[in-house]
Amino acid sequence: MHSSHRLMPYLAALAGVGLLSLMDAFMKGAALAAGAYTATLLRALIGAAMIAPFWLAQGLRWPERKVLKLHLERGIISAFMALSFFYALTKLPLAEAIAISFVSPLIALYFARVLLGEEIRPQAIYASILGFIGTLVIVGGQIGREDMSRDLALGLASLMFSAFLYAYNFIVIRRQSQLAGPVEVATFHSGVGGLVLLLFAPLLWVTPDIDSVGSISIASALTVTGAMAIAWAYARAEAQALVPFEYSGFLWASIFGWLFFREAVTIPTIAGTLLIVIGCWIATRRTREPVIAP
Image (cartoon, rainbow, N blue to C red; front, side, top):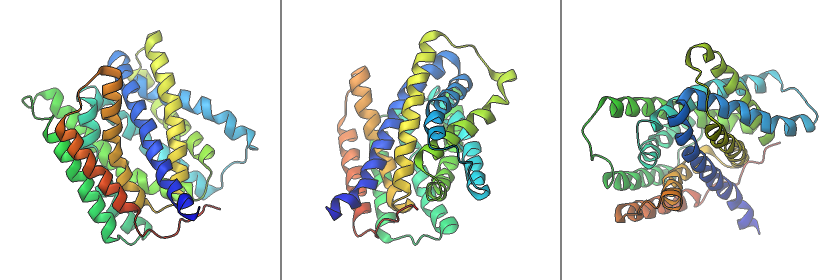
């Protein structure tokens, strides 16, 4: 029983990544149809409208100043992180974009050391490197089939910018989820991000069609659910132990690609996935007891 409880944060993180990967698939279609800005803005606002009633039902207790500061910090970071990532999805294939973004966990490991004071265990480093090698194996079998065009360059630059923001986002999640519950975290994450993006509406807004609104609504629900799962996990395990589970995003993308579009699963994909799974297994070995949020 004790072992089962110890694994729950890792299972929650794995499920959260899967939900967010499915969200990426819906958002790519919406971003291509209505533009990355409109899709990102509506996702945040609809997500906030979905989760806010649950937060209000808990008693509408306004966060303390230090907690509110974290909510604002993550909301601002997430707004530009999401906008740049969904813009990259309009220029790059979904699976390749997710795989390239896996540089974020490697950066996050050292952010966790500097900003959280976490000791970087050798297992965490080995797991992350192994997972990253796995993504390189997968990407090596799929990317590089075209010359460097302007769109490809813009997509890669936008993706790398998003990756650095995502790495720092890991650290804020760790702090945030130890001081606030998953419902509050998800409410402010979507709400603050939406308000920040709303400032640019006069310049970037494009009115979407009904199909795009439907896809964005589904993506919003997936975002809220995935964010709550990840917040719950990060409140109960160290960031460096959970970071390698981000590599499962490519596995999820491969599954959704096959289910939705019948995209073939190649031998490099299978080989890379095995390395990713091994890395996740290494990350869960000899971890410290989970830190239970107050």
